[in-house]
Length: 76
Image 1 (tube, helix red, strand yellow):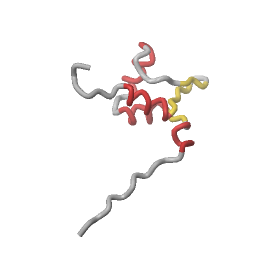
Image 2 (cartoon, one colour):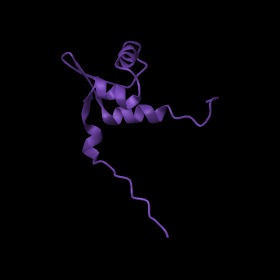
Image 3 (tube, rainbow, N blue to C red):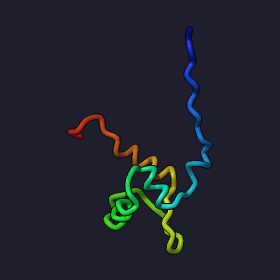
């Protein structure tokens, strides 16, 4: 009996353009909110946007930041 694996669900392009709050960004990156706050101070984290006091991250920026850190082995 052969089974076909379901095709992955691809979100629409507009999804990646959306903004999310820092708590959701921290969850996406598997980090604490405090860690991404420190990254903002040092410039080590992904790009972010400020709307008044609100900090927001664009989903595509988070995704790109993660992909930029992809390594094949530890000596890279």
